[in-house]
Image 1 (cartoon, helix red, strand yellow):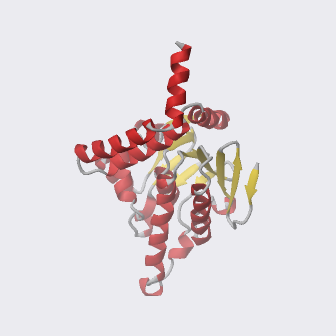
Image 2 (tube, one colour):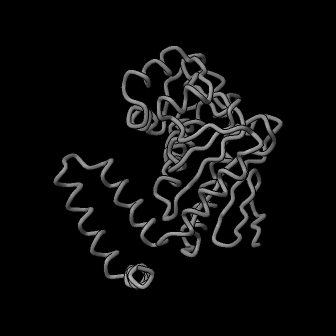
Image 3 (cartoon, one colour):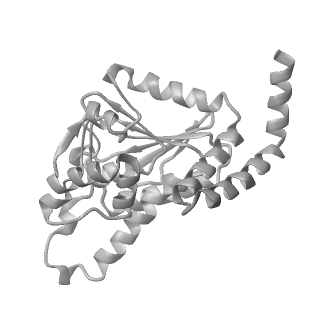
Length: 261
C-alpha cells in the first residue's frame, strides 16, 4: 500500500490499482471547507498521473456522514465581505466537482451516512454511488438563502430529471436511500453491513474486465452526456471505439475469448 499523508483533511491510499480517498472531518460531518477542496484537487491530480489506478473509492470517516456539504461558517456575513473571495470559492467548488467526473478511472462514492448539499453534489459527479440504507440526501441551500452552485443544477437535472431536481431544491427537504435509488440519484442502497463488500464487488468487476476499455467507455459516456446532438456523440464514440480497437488489450482479450469457445 502507498499512503499519501501530505493532506490536511483527507487521506489517499493506493493499493492493487485502487485509490481510496477518505474525508477526515467527522467532528463536522466531513463538511467541505477550503482545505478539503484543495486537498481533493491535489489528490485527484496525483491520481490522474497514476494511470495504473483502475478505480477510485471515496468515503467519509465514521458512520454518520459521507459529507454534510459546504462548511456554512464560511458563508457568514454580508456579500461585500466575501467579494471577490466567494466568487473564487465557487470556481474552486466547480473545479473540485469536475475532478471525479474527468478522472481517467471510474470513481465510486461509498456513502456511509448523510450526503447533503455540496457533499451530495460531489457524489453526483462520481460515476457510481452506493449508499447505506439509512443514508439521507438533500440539497438544503434554500434554507440558508442560497442556490446550488458548481454546475450542480445541470448535473442534478441530468441525473434525476427536471421535476425531481426542482422538488429537492425548492423544498430543501431530505430523502432516504430507498427514494434516492428509486429516482436514480444513487445506484444502490444496501444494508450497512454489506457496504464494504458491495463496493469491493464493483471494484473487482471493473478490474476483471478490459481496464482500458472501461476508461475509454467512461470517456465516451461523458462525452455523450455533453453532446448537443446524436451525431456529435456518435462521432466521438467512433473515435474512441477505434482507439480502443487498436490496443493490445482488445486483441489479447478477443484471443482469450475465442480460445475459450
